[in-house]
Image 1 (tube, rainbow, N blue to C red):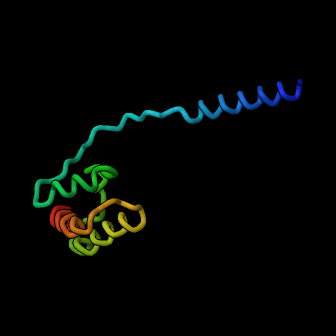
Image 2: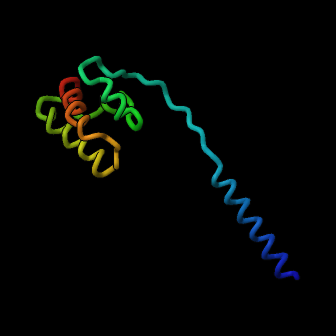
Image 3: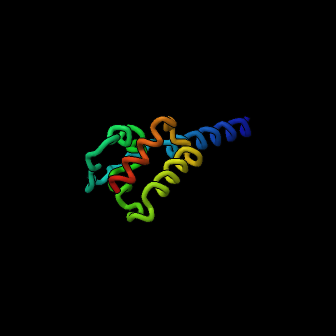
Length: 103
């Protein structure tokens, strides 16, 4: 009887610890300091990219002529193939065009 009681108490303790560990965590995100620039395909970028990225984050990416289209094509491809971003193939070119023209 004692071993069953100890086993039960141990199980309850483990479940209690699990409940504490599994408690949701809330984060307060800082205010955005950047905004997406207006331009063709802005809505496509907002619809596909802002679920994971802020305008601040995108603005921190390398800029300059040597990075333009090839850089953004590689980044969008990486988001799809490596990170599993659910971007339709029809939107890839639009995203690359917007980002390479705007950033």
